[in-house]
Image (cartoon, rainbow, N blue to C red; front, side, top):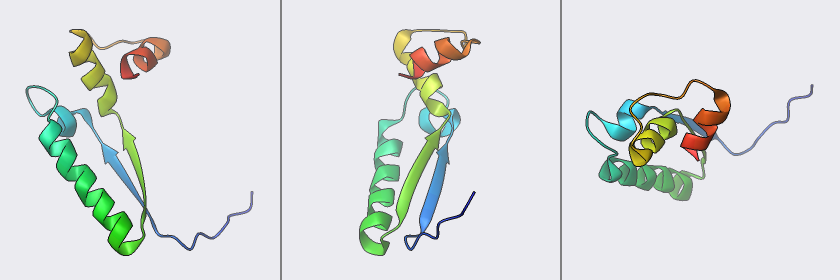
Length: 81
């Protein structure tokens, strides 16, 4: 496979459940601040920002009132959606 050079610097941000939810519930204020910082990097420096998160399953569990983490991939995908 050929690698294509990108002229745009890329930053990958991985967000886990603990960062999104803390110890209690989804922290919208924290997420808002994170998004503001990513937007500033894009606008001021031209970075391409990619966000990867394992935290969406935890947030989905909270929204659906689930107490046990799903084990099957299809269930995890449904909860994350």
